[in-house]
Amino acid sequence: MKIIDGHHHIWRQADLAWLQGPSQPRIFGDYDPIKRDYPIEEFLEDVSGTGVTGSVYVQTNWPPGQEEEEVRWVQETADRHGWPHAIVGYCDMTVEDARPMLDRLSRYPLMRGIRQQYHWHANSLYRFAARPDVSRDETVKRNVARLADYGWAFDLQVFADQMDAACELVDACPKVTFILQHAGMLEDLSDEGRAYWKAQMKKLAARENVVSKLSGLGTFIHRNDPAHVERILHDTVTLFGAERCLFGSNFPIEKLWTDYASLVDAFRRAANDLSTAQQKAIFHDTATRVYRL
Image 1: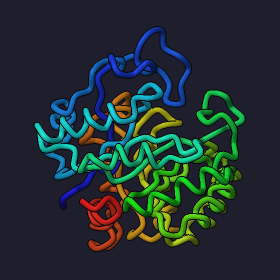
Image 2 (image 1 turned 90 degrees about the horizontal axis):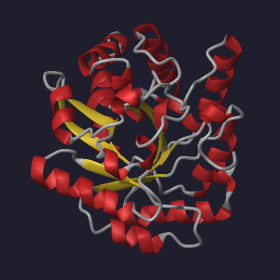
Image 3 (image 1 turned 45 degrees about the horizontal axis):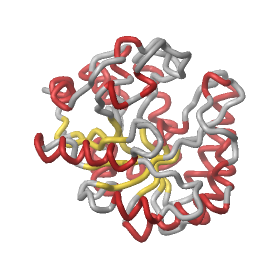
Image 4 (image 1 turned 180 degrees about the vertical axis):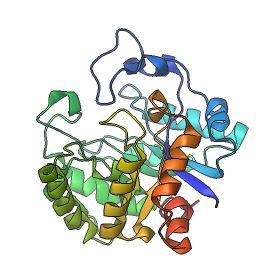
């Protein structure tokens, strides 16, 4: 079965401040092994023999003001190598009018969406956004709604307790497809935590313009755990339907604890009891549709 990797990164260490200097406490643990260049050539070596036939690059937090430089570099990489096949860039959606930057990014033919990370957590280690309710900002709503004019999706990254605010953002932008990052970032694996995550995920799943990435599932446990992958995959597919779920590797972050073939194997085994059509949706068709591959 052909696979589209709907969420991966490539980078040059020199472009990313967070990959330089002393390591800081981060959500995915010790990251010294990836504080280096991760070029498209290495990604292609990683995916070799796994059935991956296409991929989507997702922004990596270049310094402020370098949004276009990031997209230009990835577009040039794709022009040379034929990979990746789509780009999710960055734009600050909290500014009064994001259209000048969106217009600049629209000149690059592989642009398919924007990610601005809104995840906030009481645990500062898990915190990225400055406050928990950025999704409720009226300026953000206006700017995200404008993505419909470009035919672009919005990659939405929030924790479970932020999903009520995220639903307000989704409702304000009915013409935009929202792609939930990392299956809603389940970090509390207690029975109570899982139940709360599912209840909140159900609210987003009720909105037909939201799809969920099955990606980054090792983020909080720092390992590739097939049982963990299976449980989240099945819970998410039950809520969203396979036609609104897509696979993403989150490489090279997940390379901190696994190789690509083992990661794909865990996902294939997790989806093994689903129909062929459902598997095809998760591994290929949903990403092809929402990122217009």
